[in-house]
Length: 438
Image 1 (cartoon, rainbow, N blue to C red):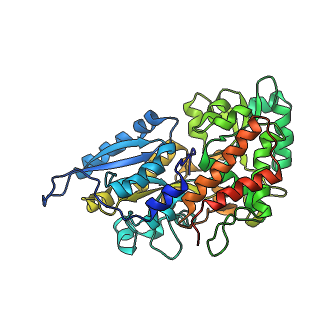
Image 2 (cartoon, one colour):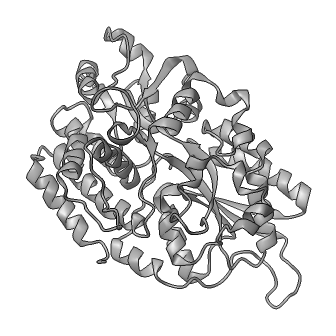
Image 3 (cartoon, rainbow, N blue to C red):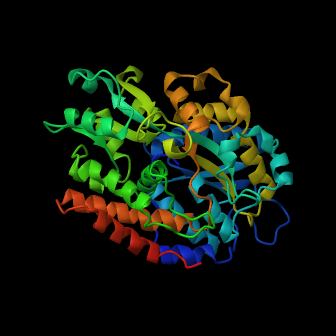
């Protein structure tokens, strides 16, 4: 999931909402009328530098859809910090949209609510067939063995972005490939009001993505094979501590980053205040903030040792955005037409080019726009060294409670309070206690 994206919802609320039955419908129309409404409502996620940037990208495409189909699409771009809470509220209030974007890591949780249209073989056929989509993207659309709850829209992966000028000024010739090298490089780049690495300590989803990858590298997971929460294993504790120690111990992240939640670290990078960021598909954001493409470089995200790959050499989660339909929309045919339009080869090229992401549609990936050096790193990561977050119904609660634990540990580090193995384990134990019991 891109640009991440705090899902600031309490675990208890999540548990209650996700087990509730959905009601109501999204699109406008006359109650009791047999005439299908000619308007769809669409909640888009914030993919660009800001909400206005998204409107500039999306509105011409929605106008194109209206011209072709006669169906008007009412657009609302929802900030990531609000999106999950808005969706969960909509599943019970009936005041939701017809079509919406979701972070792909939420697919299983929202699938368990029963509110989203299942994408069975018939529905996939209505948008051109399931085999049009890349397999790794389909792996983050819901619980394995069930009909997907959504359709892949944008694919992304994490990479290490580095400021070439700051590297050159410090005499650093190449980006770090391991975490040890990253800490050493970051120390050389920190000082005089500048910092080696940017982070978003109050961004719950970003926290999860980073510590999930580190847990994989430590041979751990946050869930057992049968789906039970397992937050306090030695590997999970080591992963969280290693991430927070970039501020607490290595001191290459500014203490103020503990409060960052909405792309502030990317802004600092674009202003030459921070030399490196670990982010999903960030090139379009840097360009929108005035950087030239030759001012930054892209390298695979670090591993503990060796080169990125599967298992303990995982260096990214399978990131991305899915598009979903509330199944009780008054215009199911129009909603499916809109999904077909948004995932068509033509639109996949337009939209993913605008956002600097990778199309999850195979044919669209062949466009030369997605063979740039920066995207080549991301494509290689998705193909060889990225792993999907656990597709379990409790994934949203996991993002909230563990993401909050990491946020609180960053706050400790920023305030100069010690971050120890014991304090990390205590935070993760508290988080695990907030998860639904199985």
